[in-house]
Image 1: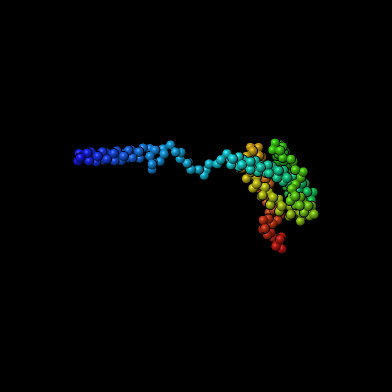
Image 2: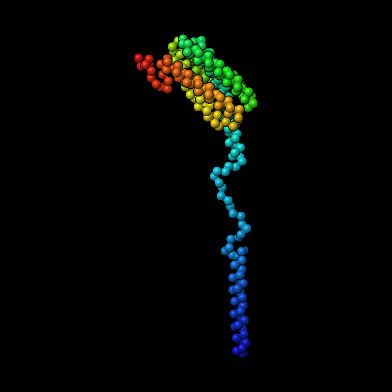
Length: 219
């Protein structure tokens, strides 16, 4: 009787130890509870410097539109420079202002001839004339004569050429179309020469530019 009880106890202990061993082995396996699955994909962090194809395409479209806007504005501005240059030859009383006006006509007509094929390539219709803002300047100068015309024309040319030079330089750096880039670089060189010329003329004629007062304006 005592022997049977001892056998039962030994059997129960053996079963208990077997269960403990099975549980321990199960937990130590790769798929066991509390262990990370080795084949689970890890989420890669998104790099801030990497753009999606859609983003790159959008930037390219924006730059293409910027190129078109530049070409259109350059044609309008060139037409205004030609018209104002012709007016300077007719209305100015100063030989240097007349010579500058003639150079505006020649250089901007030549620059316009270089831009027009690019505009056609980009599907841009050639503007019929200057922009609304430039037309207002033309009308203003047309109502002046003599010294008043020279002063207003010189001031307008200094202001316009500074703005044009900045825009041409910017486009030369950012243009997507290689032909637009090339004409912007060439145009920037021409406009830079024009700006130097008109600034020298302003000093000779003692004309105020950029809000600076001259001796004649202080009298």
